[in-house]
Length: 204
Image 1: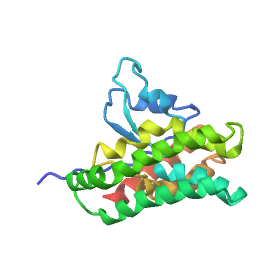
Image 2 (image 1 turned 180 degrees about the horizontal axis):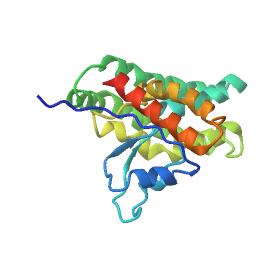
Image 3 (image 1 turned 120 degrees about the vertical axis):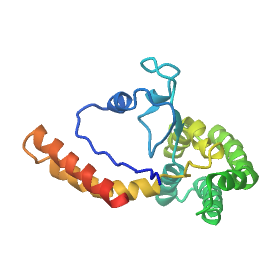
Image 4 (image 1 turned 60 degrees about the horizontal axis):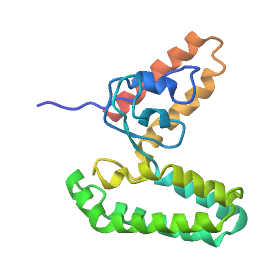
């Protein structure tokens, strides 16, 4: 019986803006689930000769952007956006544990119309709100990730937000802090290898 093993890899490097990720993912042409921005270079039409990666952005981060504004200003627009996103999450709760095909069918029937309505709502609010305001900037952030926010509607394997992965890598964030005081890059790399081995063992 063949078993598919999952791997979690931590790496210490000083390269920013997705350049190292582009090197690691050379030759990969699947779907990359992201929890934020900074990796747009991976979805370019031509990246070192490879086909562009399909990016799946995180609805959780879209919600965080709206919550930032609501918590600070009590914005009714932000509250409405959060309400709309919560409807998508309710659907995800209902289909949790289903196979990819079943999830995709449910999303096409129930989530896709809500996402289309959210897109129309987003565009109308961007026309109403100053682009320089906090709300305007955060609405623009969501707009810039709009393509990736719809990826979960095309593949039932994609999550609406990578919460499971974030939970797995949270301990690595603590190790990363320790790596800052490792004294030398070699020490930091050793900590990263230990974190990779430990995390991979836990999920398998």
